[in-house]
Image: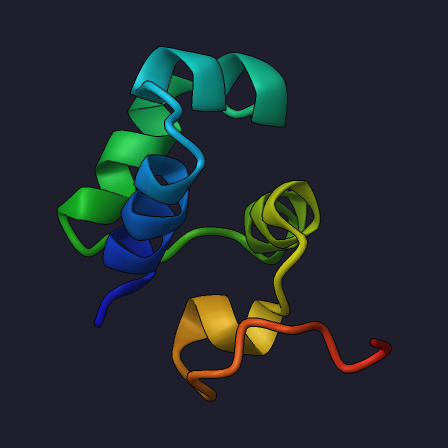
Length: 72
């Protein structure tokens, strides 16, 4: 599963539109849509999304299937 697919799944689970995600996360639609085309997000963007959804960065980048942050 790609980073975009994981983010999109998390977005759908929360019932968020792409517009809502962009406004609430502080990232632009263009940034998020680039990930759909397999562009790699910056470390800062990954951290923002992980914090927003309350998941680990390892989960977003596919190193684990456990979305829980390590500190929990």
